[in-house]
Image (cartoon, rainbow, N blue to C red):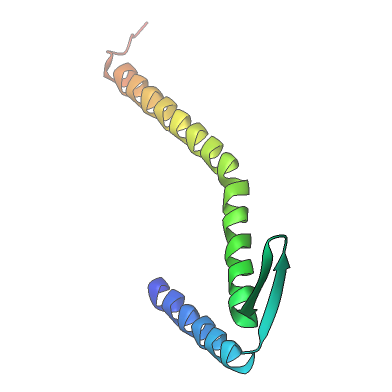
Length: 96
């Protein structure tokens, strides 16, 4: 069901993007140090959105990796504690 909603959202965004590209087909001139580059406005906006997404992922990558390492360490700790708990339950009880 979740995949269906993701697909539906993708289709809606895709249709909006195609509609936007069709309505804004004029070119924008990018002036940089080595020359000028005419590029359609819709393509420019798509490239900027893509660059922002990539920069956001790169900015959060160190935090994600740190959390994954911590998660792995905690899982090992839980396994060790569960194993120790199982071993302790297997010992005979002392009655005084």
